[in-house]
Structure formats: C-alpha cells, structure tokens
Image (cartoon, rainbow, N blue to C red; front, side):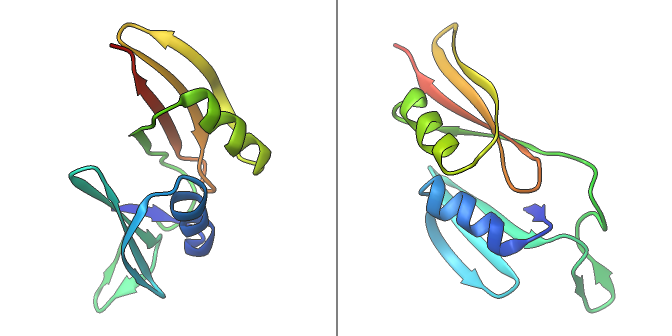
Length: 115
C-alpha cells in the first residue's frame, strides 16, 4: 500500500497519466493492476477504528518501478502533463529507464527491457 497526501492527485497520476488498470475505487482507497500485482493507494494518516495508517505527514519517500513499452515516449508525455522528471532516460545493462516523481514526491522509475 502506498500512502498519499491527496488521493485524487494520486489517482490522476497512477490511473490517468500512467494508465494503470483500476481494480477498486472508493473515496478513501484505490487499487490498480500492475502486471501480476496491484498497487494500492490510501490517504496518509487516515484512521480506521483504533488505528492510523501510513505516515502522518510528509517524509519517507517510496520508490516504485513500472515496466513500460517506450521510456522516452512516456517521459515526453508525463513532462507535458507537468510531471517532474528527476532522472532522464538512460541505457543501463539490459534496460532503459527514467525517473519521475508522483504528486507526493515518491520516486517512480519507468523501465523498458532491452533484449
């Protein structure tokens, strides 16, 4: 589960901009399909009876890596949508990747396999 400050902003980033497939949507929760796994979003500091989930303020960042078909095209699109790119596309052994920040400052790497 990824705890976020503004759920609506996170839903836009992960659902609309990154195009992840929604699994479950609610006012206080969202889940997206990522390959064989899912990415769940929940507002940080929101209580359940007797329990506060996630961090209660800004701080600990999370790093997520998502496979994409074309890193360069994804970066061009996200940058045009106002997403901050902190690591430009670059070739590494067996892959090409780039890094962007989600609305909460979490690092999201976009990775393209290079066979």
